[in-house]
Length: 165
Image (cartoon, helix red, strand yellow):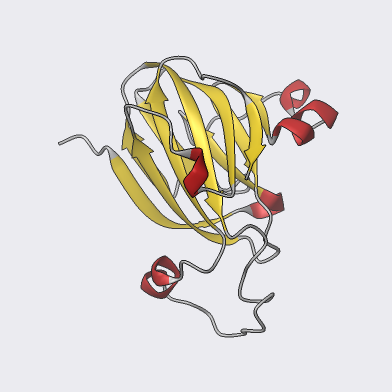
């Protein structure tokens, strides 16, 4: 049975989440962060996207969902949108330093729009004065910490870049 959603803890090393169609793949240096990518909130190539995060702790609860439409931007502090292409038929989420993905869904082959929606930007346990380590279930329940929902929508993006409320 195909998975159309997944969720879990993802360590956003170097303040970024990676969304790709092959977790063992990489990108060439020409697609790395620069002035344009930093302003837009994303870098990489259509098969290997890097999207910027905010909180210093870098440990985030992430939901990955196959969706028929873009998210309601009014429900999110920030939405970053970019194109995505899957040759493998899957979308994976991982840290830039990991060779294995933390999350995956079966999205089918083709072109997609990624809408990376975020709430509670910059809020982590350290900023709240907390020092304990959270289990996965505790992190999932903490809606006051920086968290993400990545919408994988078939077709071309309506726009590209970063929009903040």
